[in-house]
Length: 289
Length: 131
View 1: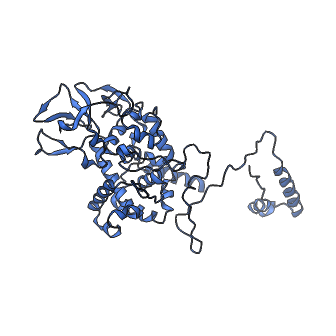
View 2: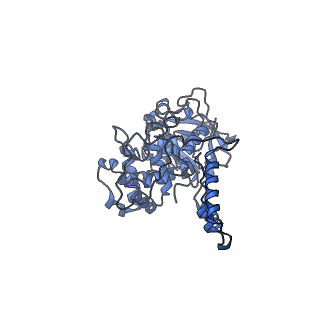
View 3: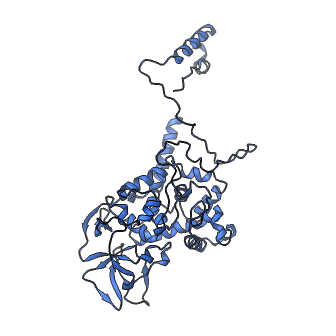
């Protein structure tokens, strides 16, 4: 535990002028406080900082400061974290499988994780233009890639989309907001352009919402649409509308279970809890804002 | 005074956050009689977008209006009601629909061989999947 320092100057400044102690007493009090602070009190347990301090993630870059980038693979600075190190997932993985979490995400910081990316602000603005809750979009990229622009032979990009899901998501988004067309990178290369893929992912989330609304969920949450995004439309609705005690393996193929690091005995309720733990309060928010 | 203001702002923010009551998860309350679970074909199961799924029609005809798309597991009316190659089914929003019989097969769990599928009324009153 970091020792508390007694600030006699601050304390005296806060007192009315007449009750300020004399300088000699201030010196004595300061010495006494420092001495006491250096000795742990009886019954106290010293706590040391376990790992690096929490990183402050500025929303707006500070002019004049160097551009600091966090290299891939250092998303989780705590190697002992059991939830870290998962492989990225992909939308509509179907039998091909998706992925786990790239690292431990503190509650409610999904939006911060996306906003700190160079493309984060544009992604938020475009999601809002489509009526998609930016936290829902942020939670998606956090779960898929840690919001890192990852390549690969199948799913690609910060939102780990397959070509069909990318194209249909983009079409849905552009149909709803044609002005976004000026921001997109044309063709399949758009999957590796995070701004373009964020628009496509927003459109795919809109499709997921529509699908779940047709399945009787009036206002689907981020958690409701997660299975649709991760496992595809065939499995998505089932998992969103299944009893918590049902095993994931009832509706997810063995290959997808394995690639998503889902235990064979994991229930849908446990899976939902695990997803919620990774994205915090975003889990309960509605996808459409 | 300042801390009071912060608390008020936090309370208002929490109130304004869009949330869904569906997050807690569902519980199957009772089975829906007259329906069984059937599976879509393996090709359908691999769909990555909704348009790759077989459509659900309002009537047993390709020319009928498309009312939606199924999940991988379909609640089929039982005893089977088949007309012109289409089978009557129950959509998860409670509406009836028709699906091409060629896209259906006997239900089995994807990877857990002991699981069951029971068309059910869920704790929120909607239709869902009990086990």
